[in-house]
Figure 1 (cartoon, rainbow, N blue to C red):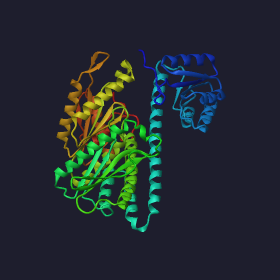
Figure 2 (cartoon, rainbow, N blue to C red):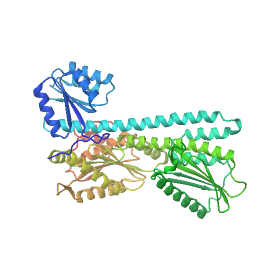
Figure 3 (cartoon, rainbow, N blue to C red):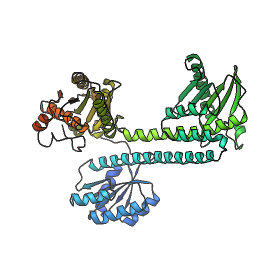
Figure 4 (cartoon, one colour):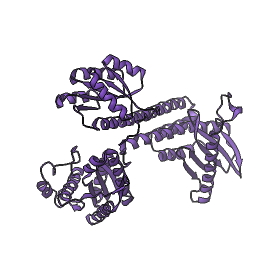
Length: 518
């Protein structure tokens, strides 16, 4: 099967793989395999040559062939660590035992493959390693943005402290907004504190990307006024996005951003103050204040609004960046479902809610049947596509209050708050039937998949912790597998299942790393 060329996420060119081997024969073999897989390949015979190659090429992965894995490979890994290289490193060599392989992995190698390497194994490991490297780089970049935003926000906070005592409330407002990473909470703080500094009747905040609008009016029951402010902000957003895509010749070289100054404009009987939200001299949003009574906004109020806008822009950008980092940390990269870490957090929370309020809670553990055969026959790329399609089917079948996560491999977990055993069984059966009846297409041919499911619940005398709830659902899942697969089983007493489960199966828990169902 022909594979698409491996392309670097940063440069758009083929990913560069460095082959390090003192053996010409081994080097030629590895070069041919990497070139066939679609990579750009460079090679080196010694560690010194390898380090020099890193300076000449944008190397994303290194395949190091060694006949003395612990000695020469460890030396190269130490040199790469000293250079702070983020290349994905795969060591290829003879089988020297688990302890030495573990030493290489601790030293920074992504994988250690023993010779001879079966067809496709090296390519698959390299693909996964490059995917992991790209995810790491994305997280690092987002973390850098978050750190820079925090530094900028701290600088602005220091600037506010130098203001006179009469502007102390403004300083408190900036500090309050900096203390949360929730956008709605930031706007709520702004609404409550800004009114103590600058009097207004209507407040509107526009955030451009992603587009969000917050509107507050003195008369909260007057929906017509709120809708009018929303329409005005939407129109302003369209105008700002249109202006940002066009270049203004008369502004070039002026040294002033076209939206740097606050604008005061009369509209109807209201006095209107609009202040842009700026980050790094780029406009990311807008604050709009309207005042029906009293004088127009004076210069001091405009300066205060501009200072608030600076803190607000940085706080909202900080919240947005934090949200992106959190989303990457809590989401499975393949299926876009919650990952195991997020599942554990939510299950613990729902378990405590059940203990506190006495409401039922069910957990469904689901596993695709014989999925290893799919991967073996069609490859992992096809398997990944089928997993994504399965995840979509499950997500569409659950309720808004339910939570579905990818637990690992081809296994999924579904948390069902305020749900009894009968309701959970009905839902699990519906999901099982939808998957069994769904036609998956692989290379133009239909493929059928089935799923086995185990249901556990609380309150239950044998379930005293979230781990117990997972173990009970696991036991029911094993029973579903034992009874022929493609069925739903409900866990009876937890101890009965634990004793009846086969060796190596019934003891699985939420922390188990080895979960083989078939």
